[in-house]
Image (cartoon, rainbow over all chains, first blue to last red; front, side, top):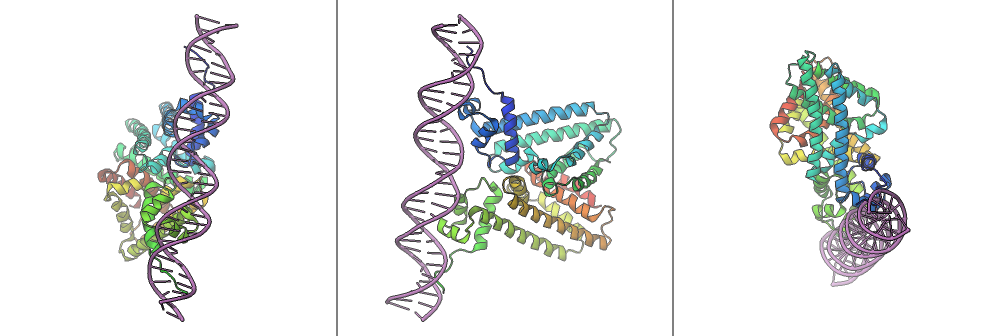
Length: 194
Length: 194
DNA sequence: TATATTCTTTACTGTATAGTACAAAAAGTT
DNA sequence: AACTTTTTGTACTATACAGTAAAGAATATA
């Protein structure tokens, strides 16, 4: 009941696959691209991921979401001013390097690419974006409770606006990857929080 | 100096190909998908489009842009209130059927899918989105001249904000394809024009 | 050290797909 | 009606790719 131990760590190879899927998208990425990036052979791959590329992609989205959500929650909980934390969340986009801009948002990419190709995968990606929206909402509600957020708009609507801004940035940052343009855009967007 | 006349119209088959590319994206669309949709054979296809799928896709983006831009300009020129025309432009999104929402924006899709796959095609799609932005800008400048637009923000920045809202809607409308949600979102966005 | 169990490598099969080449068909021109 | 030109349909080639299968390697346990 033991046998040869696994030579690779699942989380680690998923993380390596994430980079490839994020950069190239789902369809443009071949299984061999993934094997090369993960550094494992076909046998190991199909043993660990019986569903092949599709199952791996699901795991990629799932793991990415887990990491992003838990980080967001932790930072938000630690933040004295939740509204300012959201501002910082968006502002940090502008500071990222061009290579990162070119990739956009992995979930937005998935929604765009897979809506009519694989509705289930799309729903999954959409669900992760909804979690981001829910995190925005929680931050806004806390801000309202603390009297920091004074906007008369419904927090749920504000969260939706923030989500749409985020989705837009996934495209716009590729058109205008310089940090000055992005900063100006982001600062202007954040006025909905005043 | 004559010979057999062409049996199909180029614009027409490009338009049929547009639908497929728009729905499925670039990578997920095979040449055979396109041939079936266009209703022509391989011989005719490679004769008319020597560059194959890629050339066809370029023509698709180009033709779509021509149609959209010329329509926008014509309607804008006919509009008494250019700012209200922009509002109507966005509001009309919410009235479209779910099938249309699922496709998003063909240019945004191209930018998302092709940034790291085919930078030239991506640049072309990005350029078309910049034309949309330029149209927004022109409308806003006219609005400012006419005293309708009172916002203190730089019209160029406003146009950028509108573009980003548009890009975001290309994703968000697939997550929330019901017209009520979209209407609420769009109305809230349009307050930047007040 | 023998054994059982699991992982890994490699070779193989089958399929899908892009692109080419050539023959047949269609219609204008003389 | 013959001829020329161009389009169209089809057959073919080559390749890339996904997925399978089986042999061999590695290690914990007895």
